[in-house]
Amino acid sequence: MFAPVYLDHNATTPLDPAVRAAMLPWLDGLCGNASSRHEYGRRARQAIDEARQRVAAALGAHPTEVLFTSGGSEANNLFVKGAAASLRPGVVAVSAIEHPCVLKPAAQLVRQGWTLREIAVDGAGRIDDADFAAVLQLKPKLVSVMLANNETGVVQDVAALAAAARAAGAWTHSDAVQVFGKLPIDFRTLNAAGLHALTVSAHKINGPKGAAALLVDKRIELQPQIAGGGHERGLRSGTENVPTIVGFGVAAELAAQRVAQTAARLAALKDSLERGLTELGASIFAVDARRLPNTSYFAIAGIDGETLVGKLDREGFAVASGAACSSANPEPSHVLRAMGVAPEIARGAVRVSLGNDNGDADVEQFINALRVTVGRLQGLTAVTA
Image (tube, rainbow, N blue to C red):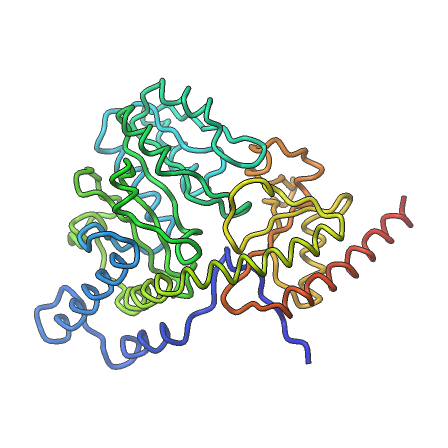
């Protein structure tokens, strides 16, 4: 019997059984507040410390560089706004393809006297070298470029970009939420190159929702965005969510242990998927760029992406659209717009993001379902033309 197939792992991932097992005691009998002085509190503090060590080890960082937050959005906001609050207003530069949780806080800084400069990308979604050089001529104080894009999967050479930004005097940050668990990450190497801060999230690596981290060079001064009891070195107040932090620690450890095997297996699946997409006449975005091993972003001429996603959902396949729709005006992906993709093509964008629970049969079944669904939609288009 056919079972639904989940192909949207860049959005979120299922909880690993080992992660669930580690969290369960903290959802049941263990209830201490990590700030309390009694035995319950000390056990909670020890659990958080151990999770911090696991996350740090998985990413090549020191535990004191790991700041726990509630999610990647909070971590990105903490860097952008927290760093800006420690500096006099100047230029903040972010890539044009950043997630909204970087683009929007950067835009908010304009009201505080900052100048926002978006860094252009080329047609394959890679940072445009000439434009980046022009940005550095402006002597930006803050730079944020994501390690890999959540839509296209394009991987940026953040080490080289950070080195150039540091030479220009900037504090540099990278959103690595989509890379963790799919490709190796070593914060110490990136930090040595010039990167000052890095964002990762638990629910993208088969961990729980509600836990993430900002890895930050301790020489960088941040102003807290949540004031209170002084948790997380005074940079993120609020009673720690012990169950999710514990789960994050285990998920991070497992992700680091499995990353080489995971990357190879997912890359083989993606190759098979894209052979099938090419046979169906799909255009694959950023196909010539280095991409994540699990991510394929495509469009089929004449087929609306939102419509295709809905039809595939009814067939039992969970994929994502590239459109950000309002009730009145469907807008193509800002990532594809930045890449110069024509709006009529961008509106057809569909993303497949593979995960640990996918196999060859899932890809084969998806391509078969896509073939049938596209045929039906093209038939309807021909009838109404």
